[in-house]
Every structure is written in C-alpha cells, then in structure tokens.
Picture (cartoon, rainbow, N blue to C red):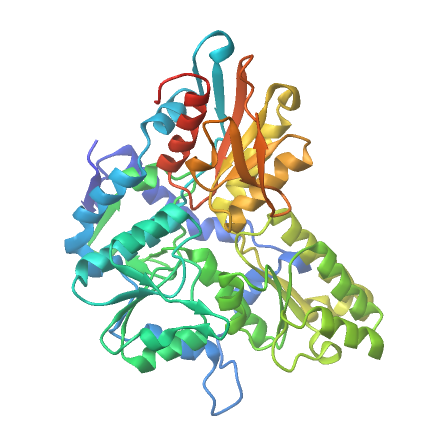
Length: 515
C-alpha cells in the first residue's frame, strides 16, 4: 500500500483508506447538526456561531487581534509546507529515534506480550491507547525541520518542546538552545535580530510573542502550525499517519481548504477564552497556574482565575454564593498567583466561562463545569444561566483516550489481583502522564511513573514519581521468585522507543535478554 494517496477532484479514490477519509470529511457538517448541544453546560455550538467582534474597547487592539497580527507575518512560520525539502531527512531521524519493534509486536498480538518460563516469565499488558499523539509528533517534526532548514543560524526554544527528557535532549543535540529561566524571568536578552526562535507545543504568552516580533526574529510556531489540503485541485494524505489514528485530525475549516493543526486543542482553548471576553465573562481555567500552557492561556485572557482541582473550584463557588469582605480578602490571598491583574471577586465572578489546561483529568474538568453551572443557577436563577455561564470541551482527545484506556485496564475482572503493578512511562513534569498514575492509584493498584529507563536499576530498585508528585525509590519492586504480570502505558509525549527501553530493563531483571 503506498504511503501517499493522491487523487483529483471527482475521481474515485484509489484505496479504501482514501475513501474513508472522504466520507469522514463529508460527514463533518452532518455530525455537527446531529449532535448540536442543548443544555446550558454544552450550549457552545451557539456561541461558536456568533459574529466575531472586537474584544476590547474602541480604538484598542484586542489580544486576539494582536495574536493574529503577529501570526500573519512572513517571519512567523506555522506551516510544515515551509519545510518540504527537510521532511525526508527529519522523517528518517524520527524513525530511528522513536520506533519500537517490541511495541509494534504488542499491538499486533492483542496488546499483550509474554517472555520466559517458570519464575522468569513476565507478561506485559499494554493499554490500548498510549504514547505519542499526532500533535506532539508533528511539533517535534517542525522543531527538527527548523534545525535543518536554518542550519548555521542561532536557534532558541522558549521552553521544553514537550515534557519528555529524551526528546528535549534530542533538541539540544540538534543545535536548539533552551532559553534560560531565572527568578526574574526568561533570558530573552540572548535572542538577537535574525535568530530563529521555536515556540513549544504548550504555546507562548502574548507578551513573549510580541517581544519576539519586536526583536526581528524568525519564529517557528509548533503549537498552532497548519497545513492545508486544496480539495479543489487534489487531495494528498499521508495514509500511514492517518491510519494509525483512532480519530483523524479535526478539520476546522469548510471545504475547499480544510485546516489540520499541529495541536488544535491548545489553540482551541485560546479561541474559547476569546469568546469569554466577547461575552464579558471571566475565564475559570482548570489547570496548574505554573504550567506553561496555563500561563500562555492566561495571557490571552482579560480576566481569569486558575483552579487546579475540584476543591479549589468549590472554594470559589462558595465565595460566589456567600460573598463577604473577609471571604474576598481570603480568596485573593489564596489565589494570589492564579488571578489576573486587578482581579476583583465581587465584580469578576458574576459571569464565568470554563476553560482548561488541555492535559487535565477530563472527569474533573466536567465536574468543575457542572459545579459552576449549578452555582450560577443558584445565585442568579435558571433564566440567567446561559448569559452567565459557558463551558467548552477543550480536553485533548489523546489525553482522554489514554485515560479511558488505563481505566479500562484497571476495571477488567480480576485486574487488581492479576497485575503486580502498572508501569507508566513519561516525563515527571508531564501533566497528562501524571494523571494516568491517578487512575490505578484510585483503583488500589500499584503504579510506578518513570521518566526514563535508567529509573529501573540492576539491583531491582525503581525510582519513580508517586501520585502526590514525590520522587521515591523502592527496592525489590519486581517479583523474581514467581512469574510477573505488568500493566504498561505511557503519556502522550512519550515515544514508543522509550517504552521499549524501560521494558528491556525488566527483561534483564528477570534474567532474560533484551527484545
């Protein structure tokens, strides 16, 4: 089967895959009509159809317009089409670094793999959704393409590209320098006119984008990068890429030129907070106030408050229902690092819209949305809910699918007795990976979150991040006196090859050769 399938308009697709893609494209508008939301919590379809107007006062440019103005410039690169000549070399580089024959074999054999006999026997049960999402993969591709295209120029990146130590080491090995963080902020003074600056998969703040625009650099944006498929002339789709996805990338624009975004979920959140501003709502962001994505999202808000979990959301909801001067002062103290400048709870919590850091736990985001919907109903009455509350589903599909898959694993009959533990592979500062640990923990199943293979030592000890974020070491974690059954999953920013390296360490502990 060819890797690329191309056909002219009105010509019969040459493969079943291409036909399925065209059918999916045709069904998009039909699906949107069929599943239009009606409840206050899910009335976002109506809001999406509202006319776009200026966000700020007359005469002042809105944050959305400022962002779009910067992104429209020639030296702001968003399209993989700018790197056509570098694509072949980058594809080869990524294949060599990230491919895993062991993980491929596990996919082919029902997501289960067994080696050894007797006490040496070890069985791996792989979650049915795990590892790299297509947005992360494309972000890496863009960053590496930039390193090839602009070889000889000074390249910077404003933060870790993704939360994975191996991938970030790869960026450094290809000449991309990380802008240093200090207590005073990032050292943008090292960036000079003519340099190339890469924006990571989490995005960048509006202030950073404006600074780089003023500095006269070439910016490569890996979070909102796009490529277009001109359906009026021909359609070319990477079949191998599309075929590996449970859900193909969303098509955000109507024919004839649908857009595929590198990570549509992050930029979708930014569009959501734009809508909050237009509706004169304060954005309640479910996320961690120190996380790069939440910082970037907050920079596009006018008024916001960031809540990290349902407990903090309940604290804010209680203030809305029971305001007082003392409660106001306490709320401002508690959320001093998580609110917009000049935030006034009495003024800014009368109309709220829910947004989120896309890698948060979806069930908790939904619970927070329902909590604020109910709070507004209790405070102002059912008739005013639609004017005072809005919620949009902006949890990343890949995040949700990986959470669902590990949930399915721990809920299988007998899983608690059968599984010795679940190995979760991914960066320790990866939010989506950390949430995968919470699910087996809640089910009473041991889980070890390792960020790389050398966390598993030859003395049968493992260094891991626990559910509370503490780095711990446990001795004799793998049973050597009997067969072992291990659940396996990985975060959306974890290459398959890094999973294989961790499993090979377990093979060695069992006295088996590597895969």
